[in-house]
Image (cartoon, rainbow, N blue to C red; front, side, top):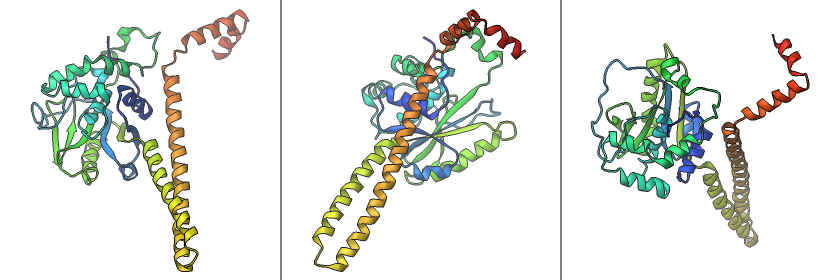
Length: 316
């Protein structure tokens, strides 16, 4: 079975990750690196750009750096999913689920080429990936060939691993070590590298896309809300028990008011995040649906009623 092209969309990637079995992760599209401060924890970044052949070879770690999962890209249409896997499989604290955890263990001693082949031959990963393709019942297979005019877009990942910041590009021989970093400063250090890559292509290309793999916002807001709500109940009980001391009671009431405001803000943020996830799901359902039979029968019915001819004449 071949790999199909899927849309570069945070809703697509979030559901793809969940269906592979990974828990607690979602993808956010970024308009500015400043957004990252509001999205902690951030596990890695994905940069999409229009690919073009680079003049010279970049310095890599052939065979892969110690402790870094790196796979060569062997299938063009798997580029987006491979960039996601490059982050997921380099984050030991994530809940990858049984299937992906077993996969990481199985390929641990493979070289980058064999890892790439293992990804391309994974039934689970390929099936989930292909499930997000838009139906194309009227497009002949040969017309999908990139050699016939299609534009090639490429995904690369930026991940902090073992005190170093790496660029993981499946078209390179190995991971590219960019600089030393810590878990607290890597987002500050990655900015100049992304900016430099954008400037490299700015003269001929303005279409870039930057996304972040972050913690699931619904779960994070839900957890914070539960903790703050519990704190609110404690403060309410303390206010009721502090009748003998006006000063203490006033101080507790101020804290209670601040906590109630925080609860309201978290409830609003949680509701907005839940609405966003529902919208992502609805759009994915529409994206996968094949509307051609409906349109065919609609046109057939309009023709039978004599309504199609006048519309065609009007459109000319």
